[in-house]
Image (tube, rainbow, N blue to C red; front, side, top):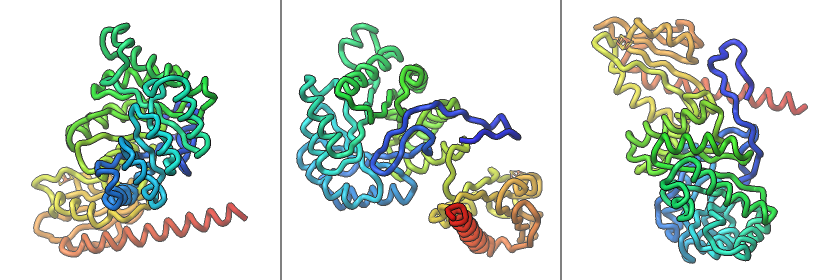
Length: 380
Ligand code: SF4
């Protein structure tokens, strides 16, 4: 990412990592930080699983993980990987044969800890399947399931134990001459996860998958993930993220994107800047923002929109957004539309939602057309 010489306080210097491929999606190096989620359907229910994957992908998921605990699941993976719009990571625990089946079924990546699947011969078999089928591997260390000898050595899950576990798994892959791996050291405790990830980042150049595991429900989990993932990303750590929520995977993707957007690490769709509203508001800000969030969900072009209740903050916020609307004084029934920071025209409160949706759609088309023209010029 290029550094901002005018606003240096916005700079995030990303940790240098190797790049691997998860199917067609690069992870690490200078690739965009990817957003992942995981299905919670029964994997053998192919229709339900594909439906959830498609909804997550439409919300912006770059990669989706699917559990493969049994033979029925790895069999279902064949159709799932064939029809999924995004690469699929097969989640495997302990059963090395499921890993081999998942690789054969078209998984782009295997989430498996090589230290948990038995002797070197089994590791070699999984690595061979991964190599034969172009799979990468994610090593997923979890504070809740650390190896017994590490718990005995360290007394409890701690950053040293988690990183040692991760490096032990890495060594098994390296000894098998396999280098297409990324790694996570997740914990539900934000302090533990953040410290473990910081140590891990210094100990390996592998791409890092960030997550605060079992973070909780939509609100609590979002806050916890934003603090944990947000602080790590701010310090440049993390190449792919998953927000774990006890909620619809689509919500996980939305939260993941919002974390990246807040840090300027990735943009997608309309970023709405809105005030909390108060007695000064010239229109119902909360209902309007709710309606606009829904109506603008289909826009993928990055752009900003300010929806501000009155002139106290409206013109200032509009200055920094592509499109803005500021409420007029009480009883006026209309407000001011701003385009590229400048006052443009008045619009009635009653028609403003439809009008703003139209303006955003038009602006998105213009931005897309300009980008396409620039890309074709660059290609000539
Ligand atoms: S911008 Fe105006 S309406 Fe919104 S919170 Fe501030 S004072 Fe209230």
